[in-house]
Image (cartoon, rainbow, N blue to C red):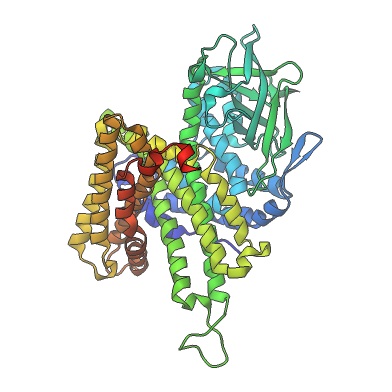
Length: 592
């Protein structure tokens, strides 16, 4: 199945859901014009379709291998990566000081979608490099930035995140990796990290590990964690590579999906300690690491969009070609293409609408991140930062949920052939599943949303977002377009449900009823995503003029989402406001 970059859909979301047109008018993006963005995405889409996408299947069947404690990647992977890096794609948002292009996060996120549609296993490696660049640029010493950032920005070297240990998953306070002061300004790190994406590979000459570890005199818990830079090869003062560091890939994980991505068990200090360099301050590493994790969470949300788009395109192509059964209008002796049957169209429209809604939420989050950095006054930057913080857990969790849901529907559209590996539909399902887990499980995202994000500025940020949604509903009512059906009424009602659920949660938290709030956290995140997704789809449809060729399609997607997907908003709100309910019973009662 070939992949085609969905540039019209992406551009519509950029311009009318994420506010790119407005940002350009306001001068936030300098001299960058919409034509420039379209040209960048056109080139990115061509590379994704012609170079990365053809390798996706091979990455699944002939994934990374460990040979003599060195990881060998899928055939063709190295050439593709080096061509990608040579094209300047690794430095899109990086500062110009280090060789980057300083483009908006919104452009980066759109490109990330294209890379992930090409191959999620390929795209996750550069995603972590980008996170490392940001952490090092903000928290690194001048010498570390000078030695490492030009190579990381160019893509000559890649970066990793080393957080998880066998006994410490989400609970980083339980990590045991140790760091000792060496007396010369460097440190020696000893320990084991698991689930390390691209922990070792043959794509680049060096790998730069960002590692969480504890110093001997560190306070307990999260307050005693430091962040260290640990290179695979020591970098000499002149930038040349020196000796191999004391860090190796001990083994590769055998996974459900993304087989082309090497997921490593990394051992530091087999020979006395890996040479390491402090990033930020001692015992303040978690704050530095969250610089990486927050943007990485948005990037993982975009993985869900990319996989969903690829699965949708494949299912749509199959439904147009596969002939089976008859309809009353089918000519004698022939079978109908399965796309002619309403239930198949229902599945395809669900896939299309969910994908576009998730895309809009991710791009809207990226736009808020841009405004948090580029808005002209401090108050506007603060408000944008709060909006980005509010939307990030929604973007990560909802988009990865729908990545899996859409991939599952893709298998269903294929029928029995979807369960057969040779069609490739099953690979999308297997690949998508991990995105709901890593970079903070989706349950953790829901907890973060409810306990930290909706309470920002005493609820001002979340109520401002709901007010924006209501303004879209008012515009829908005024437009009174027949092609949008009941979209205005559905959005208005869904916004009311979201408002009620939000007020309930804020009151529950204020009263100390934490379990009541947490019991509905996942349902609340889903509710918020559905309402925001519908508002974004409506914004896109409302932007089309009477003679716009895509108007009918945009209206159909918004109407379907309103009348078939967001219809469940009241039920989700009821679940949220039901409190802990039966979940308040002890595990002994619940699981007797």
